[in-house]
Amino acid sequence: MKRHAVSVVMSLAAAVISGTVFLLALFDQYALVEMAASIITALQVFFLSSAIGDLLEKKKETNRTRNSAAVLVTIFLVAFYSFRKYFH
Image (cartoon, rainbow, N blue to C red):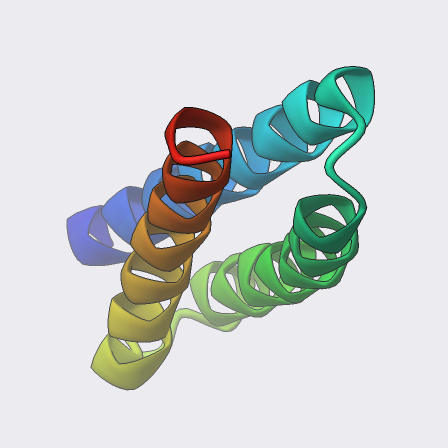
């Protein structure tokens, strides 16, 4: 049960970070980053709902592939925004 709670918190943090990057890109008017961030935020919300579903269904194992994808996509988005901001 603890693993599922960690998975939900991690997915929630990834969705919040993706949404924050979207808002920052919106204010800085980086269109390509906005598009990527909006798509990735939708993906993160899907991952979050899937993690909550696993918690409610009381599955024995967490989906490690989904957790890894959530973290890697978030890192990619932050790196993409940073690259665009500092090398523009």
